[in-house]
Length: 382
Image 1 (cartoon, rainbow, N blue to C red):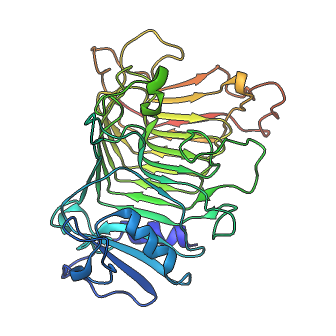
Image 2: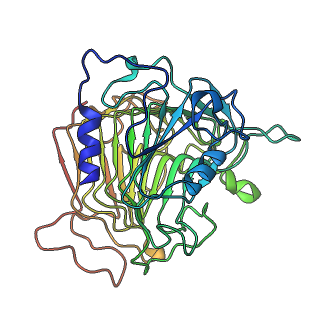
């Protein structure tokens, strides 16, 4: 019910609201303030004692009361830092990251400016660091959500730029992409980091094109997977976000959103996606009941010879990895991009690879349930 409530709050229109720089803390909420000019020696309890980094925020969340929601109120400015591996959760509660003057339900015009999170550079080479901006991983043994569950992370109206692998990656399997330090286990049934909200965000210049890297050889750690990557992460709402310039140098691999390894019941709607160097949407390995609706696409992908071919929506099954097809996914009512990035040809709407509306996947995969197909499309237009 918390997920549904969060979505309803996100789409309400607030009329005549008076926005203060430091809103009064709601009852039962731990509020933590961030400021680019703050100090991690502070306690973050007020705007005057704001902290500077997400690493410090995580420490404060870990030390706080488990029976409260968390609001991380972030002052407008540019926060230059490498990514954070997030492993701290409040079961039954939410952890929200937002501008300090944001009021639930308002749009971008209700804030002074988006706080910007920009990747740091290595002190010697001056290359941007590898990794994702926000890498959500299962908690360590003995900590809340060590076995997976509803993580309740919420992101509102922030900008993320110059990260190589991803902006936000939620890896409930501690596996693929292998940024959480583990190995994906297809038999695991207890893992999962679910029930997150990503709303009104701007993802700008994500991928190794902007971070001096490649998807080959020793530099593979800089390969970009997607602006948002979900691995065994379900029941998420990704709405009203902007994806701009999400590129790898190889013009491949990376996507606006990449759902993989049993990531199901996700909603991706009302987003704007342009200049993504590979297919904007990719679904993989038994990721079912996902909805991609009412999104607007600009120019994406390249007119090139590749396997599988470019498309707005791609479901790919890797049989050599014993993956199974996904089913009951919906790609509907989207405004499709008229052209590829580098030609006047139309980027196809969708592709199943291998083909077959009811093909189950690798040997040993169960047949799709009776009456189900891998994908339903309707109402899409160029």
